[in-house]
Amino acid sequence: MTAASHPFDDAIAAHTAEPGRLRGHTNPAWANMVGPFGGVTAAALLHAVHLQPERAGDPLALTVNFAAPIGDGAYDITARVARTNRTNQHWLAQLDQDGEVKTTASAVFGTHRDTWSDTEAVPPPAAPPEQIDPTGFPDGIEWARRYDMRFVTGPLPLDNRAQPDSTTTLWVRDAADRPLDFTALAALCDVFYPRAFLRRGTFLPAGTISLTTYFHTDAAELDSVGTDFVLGTARAHRFHRGYFDQSAQVWSRSGQLLASSHQLVYFKG
Image (cartoon, rainbow, N blue to C red; front, top):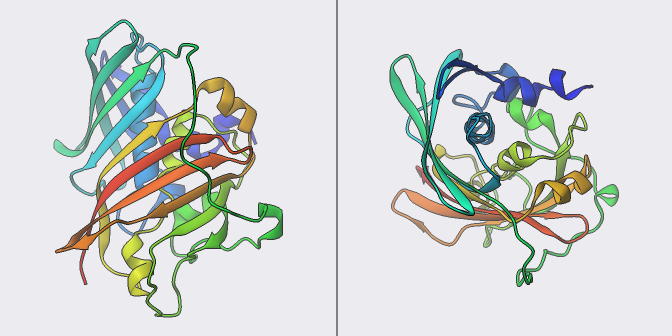
């Protein structure tokens, strides 16, 4: 399967309607329970900025605010550069549908320099993915079928048993062997189901309000990952009065931290 025909590339594809405004379309392969998978929306916004001719450098940070559900069909993304500095560039983006604001975003791009480097975080312990059976999500969640998921800890609760810890760790990769790049990594940072499901042991009404992703890698390192599994881990810090946070990390098999994210989630129950 070529990149041009991959459902992920179809889902984030956009054509220029006028300078700074692009037209895209939702893809049923990435449908969630309400609207499209948030990760593919984040990827579409990042891709829209990446297509701008004045864009400089690689993504460093992306914040996406999900203001309202996106319906099936066409949408518009506007992207404008707010400021360009010597080593970084700041962008604002907005997704509109039928004249209504659905999603807003800010992105920081930058150029990498050779400097002293170190990683204080450590990946969670995990058996190799080849030793873990694929599991994934129930069939009704269409976007999850696009990934090969192998849970180390904290699989989706299907037994109505509450858990004392909200941590999930899993190996994950594109099910159709699409190589990892920045847009795919942005989507991967949202593959973790809401932490309230695990703690309460059941499905609850829930949805991400704001998702921020930090990219700790460069294009060459992502190229070295290729189509291999990455190791993701996520947990919450506090559930309180209808909201909770959710932090995540994504690691390469070789132990390099590729991205970290933090999101705010609305829930009932």
